[in-house]
Length: 309
Figure 1 (cartoon, one colour):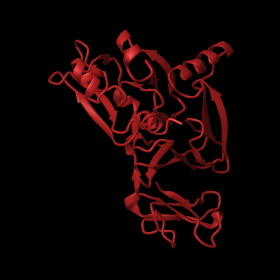
Figure 2 (cartoon, one colour):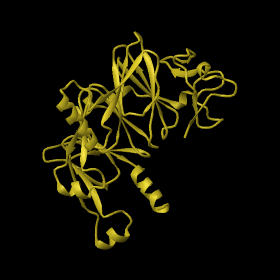
Figure 3 (spheres, helix red, strand yellow):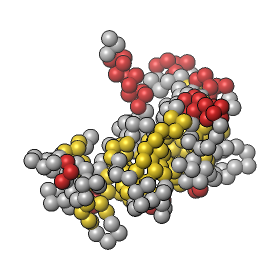
Figure 4 (cartoon, one colour):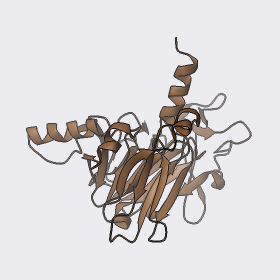
């Protein structure tokens, strides 16, 4: 992981952080925008002692950026720092506890459910829906009231890659697994949804109450390890995967669970008893499935088995 380092004899407020511009690297030494630089090691610092940024460690995300929101990933892809340029009078929502730096003039407040205007009972229902889908009962909303563009920074709690998506590219809706939501536009709604087959409910290895992320805007999901994109077509209408490796899939795909194989394979194969099948429904011609290579829950369960005390 990269660590935050202030350097010897240097106060946090005086450190320069490099930010990519369309033409060149620039320095930001304004105390309101400065932060300790991220480093993968002393020989791999994101920002050198002169404040120059290493362009190789910054990745812009044009597919999810707009005039109101611009996203960048800084540092290691496995332990990324997310920068969000937020224009005045616009907001961004994130899971609670993900914020790293909050500039002056950006107001933070907690909202229940998806934060949309609703009555008391409706708000309670939306909050409960988020809990059932594996997310926090609340969302953190950050609104820029400074009169100028501000840069916020967020981090992750799971070692792995990010999945930035513009929902308009996927029909305005995707289905995510439990806990994959990181941050996104404040125009999105996040609600629980059920899978139609009981096998997926009882043996899926993940919460059978999944989350529907819908609306006009962008969302950034988090997955363990590398994130793989699999396209479904009439020539390849379905895939079978480990039940814990799913991150998300596009709407209207069929999600079911089936036995992994013979009794001997299920008991001694080490691949579990059930596999998840994601497939096109009749009449569909395309769909997208995102997978993760490092299911964090499996990693935690492995540690628990080794240290049962």
